[in-house]
Image (cartoon, rainbow, N blue to C red; front, side, top):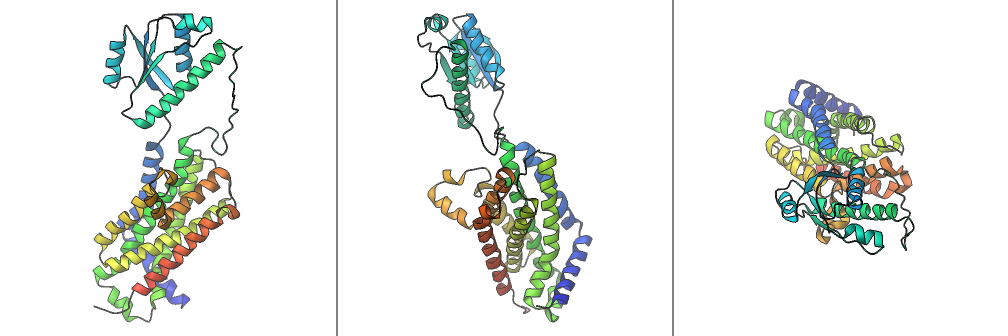
Amino acid sequence: MNIARTIAVARKEFIQIKRDPISMALAFLLPLILLFIFGYAISMDIDRITVAVADNDKSSQSRGFVNSMTASGYFTNIGYTDNESQLASLVDAGKAKVGVVFPNDFSRNLVSGVPAPLQVIVDGADANTATIAIGYMAAAAARFTSESAPGIRPVIEPRVRVWYNEDLKSRNFIVPGLIAVILSVIAALLTSLTIAREWERGTMEQLISTPVKTVELVTGKIIPYFAIGFVDMAFSVGVAVFLFKTPLRGSVVLLMALSCVFLFGLLSLGALISIIARSQLPASQFSLVATFLPAFLLSGFIISIANMPLVLQYITNVIPARYFVAILKGIFLKGSGLADVAYDAFLLLVFGIVVFTAANLKFVKRIG
């Protein structure tokens, strides 16, 4: 491979990008927009669950339980109702996600030291919110019991300690995965246009007539987008750390080095798509389908791979974003070193080599 010819192709591509405002916008504005929209819009944290209360007991104990619930910050009491029918109407209308009904003997049972049941109605239309609300309610009941009857100790008393994401903020694991999704889209989309653009404008014939070899052409086409992807990656990491306050406990050097491996594979995939499509519109459409959807749905970014059907779990093995998401979460949250992420990094490198080789084999320096 001739380095001078490769640099000449890369320089030509740099000039073409500078003259194309659409490419510039895709390269630098699209990652910014995606990062802010997804970073702020996607949240798995659920709090301020609306609660309606039908208090038939009207005692200090029942009011104390409601106050204990709302003091946790997870529940918001929208008011007391006169009977269960009014409470059911609020749940039906969606104004209350949870309804609590205190029987008239609630305080008497509590003072007597016998079980004091109370009815909890949960809106199950949103199964995720309902499951979390049930967990919050159980925790609130356990806390109120321990506070109102300190002499009663449970048989099993777990002492829970959360590692890596101590505050259990969903943003801490969403933002690192979001970086992988954004890079997947940007890298493949930009390079998917580069060679197809040459075919559409009729300038590919000029390139083919030169002594430039296939590997020099593909490499030269990729280099400018590699530089852009690296800048986007550095910017995304900066936004994650300084704006979203995501903890970065691992090595920044290791993170950027493995990002380069991931970029190499995605850029090669975009080049391969561009070579096959030979037209910008189908190339851009196919690159979005081939990168964004798998990265968003099958990488473990939002949905745990272990919870997917077995067939989909096997399919995720060929999704490069899966390995990069694991690397990002490991370095960001766990402070993982190279030994911890070596397997994922190796598979990313293999993917990049295979796709880059396929792109070179697919491109034929022949007109027609």
